[in-house]
Image (cartoon, rainbow, N blue to C red; front, top):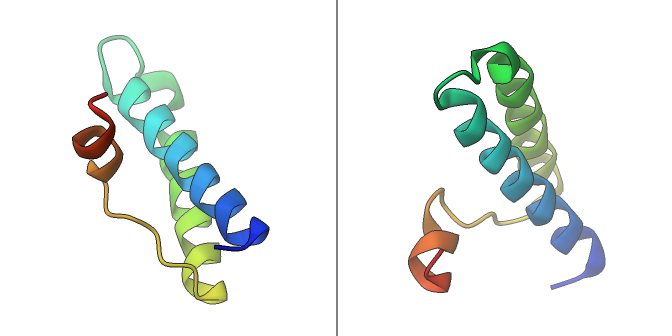
Length: 64
């Protein structure tokens, strides 16, 4: 995997984490921003042909 793909995937993972945190108790303030960031990161990945692991994949395989 090249450096660009790694950065895009890291951005998607960070956005997913931010969305989970915003969806939790007391986090609704940043929910819209977190969702926008995730959508933008996924759009970049799709447009550039970067295959992003499905949501939850990291937790399953890393034990997080």
